[in-house]
Figure 1 (cartoon, rainbow over the protein chains, first blue to last red):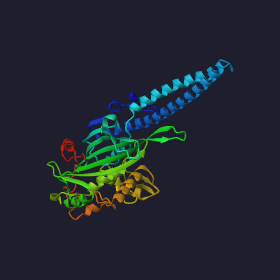
Figure 2 (cartoon, one colour):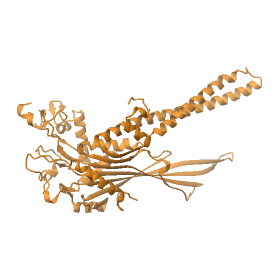
Figure 3 (tube, each protein chain N blue to C red):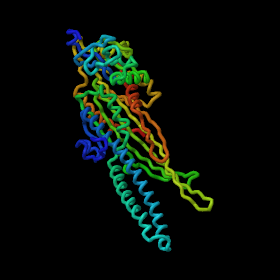
Figure 4 (spheres, chains in turn red, yellow):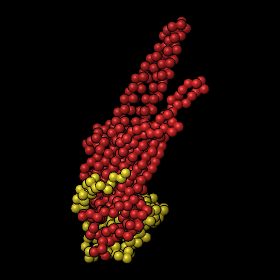
Length: 311
Length: 145
């Protein structure tokens, strides 16, 4: 894909499908999944930049259109009063019309790019994580993936309600639940690594009124965000090679949200960690870092010991 | 490289959560620790070819292999993590504590010398069906309140 290409049709068929549905599901060869995510990451980064530019130009042309329209009206009024030439308003009116057309063109482009935009987490968190563990993955095995790249959309709202406003006029709380990553990766040591990432974002729309000096009532609004990222990392070790050190597991269970379960195909240990972020205006950009996910798997692997029959 | 090295395999340790020998045919030896390394892990050092582990220890070396191994070392130091080593070759590094665990490491439990320990293979994929459904169906599965 070229550096400036934001056209999804320039992508591979798999990536085009992913951009269209904003989903990556199924059982993938690890290398192919990484290639797809890298391709999508490149596309998303370019799309994000182009979207930002289109947004900027749209607003710029809207503002210039408004300014020139005001100037045109003033000149028109002056011309109708007999001040100046009647053709003078055209000098600002025609460019205003041109700027309006440009604003519409860039607005359409902005909207089109926004539709193709993917959530950023997959390229900021998941792709680097997969790159980091690539040497640990069984290249012959397939990776089970259920990735939702659409981000926070309206269909992910699980609750929207008014909450006690306190000193504000009203507060509307909206909760989004976005389980965007579900992976099962076969490691080269026979273990299975499972990863689930869930974003629970809550927006608080605070509405209040203020009185200006002239006695005018002003309606004000501010949106605050809280984001909770829940990461569940689980390991199912190859029972013939490794087993869980139950004492260590119990010890850690006191400090961490760690669950141990006996399963016919291998005992599983799942570690859950929650990370909080907050912001004003736009949803929090900061997410969990790749290092934190790797740290969780290192924590789980450090609880493993050679299987009893193998010592 | 001397003729006897042609049959040697690369002993650079690859992996992050656990370590394995690279196993590819060696093309040269590390000028510092004499460890045989393949084309991929051959790392140009200031005073000759190095293995990635030695390259990572030399701050003057800044190529990709050195950076990658340095990052790995940072993870291990940062999390106090000692990975398992699934290999056969005794080129111990300062990360091999688990090799000396009381109950024996996986390496200690490995088949007789010369027999290759096969990694998970395609069977490991089957784990996903169970593992995947496990995420969904368990009442106390992955979904947390």
